[in-house]
Image (cartoon, rainbow, N blue to C red; front, side, top):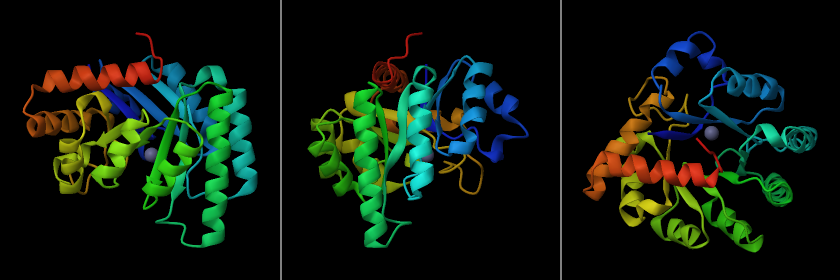
Length: 247
Ligand SMILES: [Zn+2]
């Protein structure tokens, strides 16, 4: 069985053909990441309509708006029993260049980490051009996380793994060389798979979808010289255990 640990099926890109998209990933498990407070109802409804969709709830890392941050925290508390994790949350220095706003991102991130501890929810972390700070903050808070689309260097990934973090590998590992090097440096026990649909398509220029997570499994198998089934089993076990999903 395959698990897509991170995607955005509540985005408008799936409004017209979600049924077909889900038809192509039957037998898989999908963790949908809700990151916009006003999409929460829509996202939660999806996991009621489809048995194999679970969801996490957070806030886009680059969103430094104080009201939306408070609203996101309130929604996480309110829907604690309908979600399997808190996220994505984290730091994005690619979109946020201003030091004052970066400080707001870091404060929000710390508060989200505290909330995840309070509510006993596993964390899903987004970091873009901010891997070092993300890991330091997690370390300072003695928290582990699933690092979604991790794109830092192998040394930072290894440090995160030592802290108990999972590193999530997107399907575009099929052609992104730096991601391939990351996979080579990490043990299977620390990896999970994702698509980040509709983004990061393994087929350039096309909308991504959960069924494509198989390309990540195939590439990792090739890189590690093991059977695809072994990658599927190990990464699914990691994901189910992390999110406490019982089949
Ligand atoms: Zn995402």
